[in-house]
Image (cartoon, rainbow over all chains, first blue to last red; front, side, top):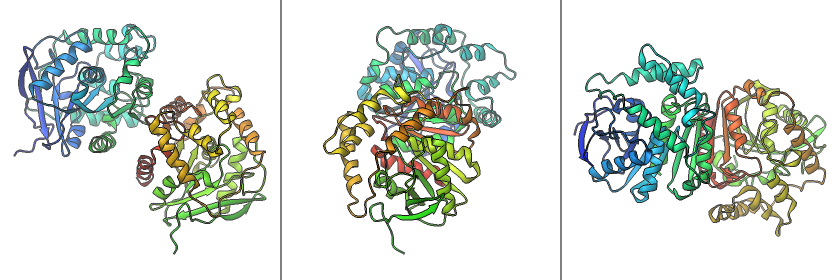
Length: 285
Length: 285
């Protein structure tokens, strides 16, 4: 059997709910696969190959574009509940009965909704750079931090330099890690994913607004998520404020927190060797 | 050479600064020893044997009673700066040129002061259940949390059941871990340390008040502590609020945070296998 890497793994397609989902699936078979939920405006190529290639020797990983993203058909819903239903249809279409679930940033919000909808489907949960409903976003409009609005509102040349600001701190060490990440991100040169269309960002922004505005007592829904959970963030995450990770582990019944030093929203890319070690250990035990 | 455990290691004495310090030193020699700074009212026996016996296969550990505590002579100063000076005299008296430093609770406050006083002496730092100056203590008088005042103000039968409330949450699992800890704590039956006298608690309480009341901009002194630091707390620490650990890693230049689930001030005793694994890994790399 051919051994793929993040760079060589082909894109496959599966149909469910009237949507043709693009996905990539590879790694050591026979165990419980780890399904990845992507960040704002990201497609199949936006995951860090260093993280993926560190995890696949020990488990299968499954990346997918949710409905309306890049090479997947359909429309992006304007709520994470809607995105979760589509993700669940995708997981069902692959015939999976139990998975581990990873969500990064807004992907972590989708992941929380999936585990609420389908607790029996999930064994363990990894939430990275994300937040509970009714999160802290400073005084940002639409429950988006002022830094997020400012960073995503600026122009970058080349465009991918956006991620140096989103994922890394301004320190020299973090920016250097960011440039290494960009090289890895661009290292898949054949069969890259399609671009996202102009409807993706507005729908995802609407979903963040809805997620931030939940009425009622804060964080109570988290008490029902009993799954072993690993929460990861940077100590200076300006996209999804770090304190939200504290809210998660103070309200989830069984969640451990790791915060990495001198790191922003892309803490796990900056510290990919540490993250791979700790994620494999968490998932293997 | 005889192999000691936390239960069998003898107490030794060394004189410095006019104080006769009681200490215990054992474990794998030849590397950098790890020096422990104890919590409120604790003596040499209050460290968890499970943690100690998990660390000593890979390094030397040094426990000591600071001045005025239990079997050490002298007076307990009413500031952590004073306690740090005594600790430094003890470390000098052992002829140590470089150490790793661990501080638990108020011991973590002393440890911060030692690293500020003697940065070249310290290689790596482990801060557990502790707080920076000007910490968050709710509306507690003297910068002591209301829960601390209430828990230490109650009577317990047997007296050591105090630690079930100080170190563990009210959950069944945490209380069960607490009962296991108490067994370990009591398992040294010969050559236990002396009791503390009635002057210890007031002096330590005064030091907490002084630590909490620092004037000026919050947390700036932490920017000068560049040492690799591991910060550990429980997700529900009511003795030193968990948010103080977030303050530490958001202001120390090179600090990683681990928060354990369903745990209070004694998170590392409740999760001693995890802690030993992670502390050995942090110190060995």
